[in-house]
Image 1: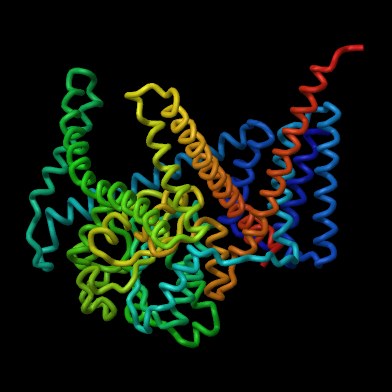
Image 2: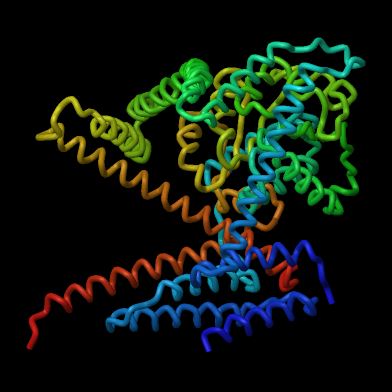
Amino acid sequence: MQFDIGIWIAALLTLGIISFLYKDNVIYKVSEAIFVGVSAGFWFISLFWDNIYRKFWVGVFPDPTSGKEPQYILFGGVLLGVLMLSRLFGNKAGWISRWPLAFIVGATAGLKMITFLASNAVAQINATVGNFVAAVAAPTFAGLVTASTVTIGTFCGLVYFFFSKEHKGWFGGLAQVGTWVLMITFGASFGYTVMSRMSLLLGRIDFLLSDWLHLIK
Amino acid sequence: MKKIVPVIVLALLFAIALFNDSALELSPTWSWVVTILLGLAMVVVLILSMTGKMIERRIVFLFVGISLVLPFFMNFTMPLNVSPVVQTLYDALNKLPKGSKVLASFDYDPPSAPELQPMADAFVKWAFRNDIKVIIVGLWPQGPLQANLSVEAAMADPEIAAKNPKYGVDYVNLGFQTGNEFVIQGMGTSFRAKFPTDLYNTPYDSIPLMRGVENFSNIDFVMNLSSGYPGTVEWVQIAVDRFGVPVGAGNTAVQAPQVYPYVESGQLTGLLGGMSGAAEFEKATGEAGQANTFLLSQSFAHLVVVGFILIGNVALFIGQNRRRAPLV
């Protein structure tokens, strides 16, 4: 007889969650509540120790034997974090939380703007145009079809999002092609998502069949 | 009756869990018989739906469930070709000379393990077998622990166990660091500043493998396994585009379409996308693992899903024609 309490709890909770496929029931609700509670607990502890303790506390009060200087600048981050909690005190003090939010939004935009411009705009445009030029310079049937499809698809997709001119006539035709390109893209993305969700289920089935039921090695 | 069935199923499962100790495997003949029976059952569903009988959604769930479970016991081998994006990654890894330092960033957690763990297992085994030094980091808290599972799996291989890769010399786990993409940015200047100790609190300077490793210029390749933010996108934007280090990646299927453009533009050196990417990587490296079994289950389930999409459409169009037909 084999009995591992941890595996049994995990297996029963897995079955509890899957039971929702039959119909909503108490066991599902209990399993769901445990899952949400454990996740929230894990993240709270993880964030507390990684951020407040390891980053702030150890940074401001370093071990004297380590020879590190205290980083008092970290108090600035703590102050912004505390200000964020002003929302808990209603409308009168809630406006204060906009200051740390403004700092986060501003800093993130500033730090990411150049990164996104370089990696997601310039490099992508360069690749799209570059591949097309290379395909025209050294033409092969497959190369031309691929490069043309990507270039025309990208251009038509952009036309679809151009709303300063009414989508009529030749311009509307380009926007229509853009719509098709977008639909194909979303379809591919959805297909991949289905594949991923199946994989998650496979992970649980593998656990049930191997660790719990010992039916596979 | 409806209430007794779940009780009987549960009792059966409990009995198997408590007393069973032998693996179940179907012979190739029985595997074909079961597959044909499943196909016939779907034809019955098709006929029922064509005759106007409503098929309950639970029937669809049941079929998908069966199609996912059965392949675990089947004795089928699935033909598999290594796609160019996977081959690109394998070729880039294979070009690395012995003793090269590869930074492996494990940016995922257990929910994504079914897709990413087989990639990690195959990569770690390949690295140990080919004398590649592996420096493990994580931008997700559970990532470095997932990496330890892969190291354990690799050590269970007799050939690798005989080589006896040493912690701190052949591989090291620097653990998790908060800060998302700013960790990558910081590593561009100093690894030591971002990871002052390893996962087990060993000081950076006491780790033999990390001697002489200051920043990305001392790293030959970055292997990123990612299931979201922070992950491959951030590694490309900062490590590749800012510091010029080559990065290859393994992603969950959900994330793969977002990352493919980076492969086309040459910013990313190869990509393993989802379960199929994992299975192809296993084939390329010769490290047969879980992904091949999982891919068979996934393919079976896809066939069933596609079958039900067809059944649904046939039932819809026949239903429409029936409604349009004049009453005699």
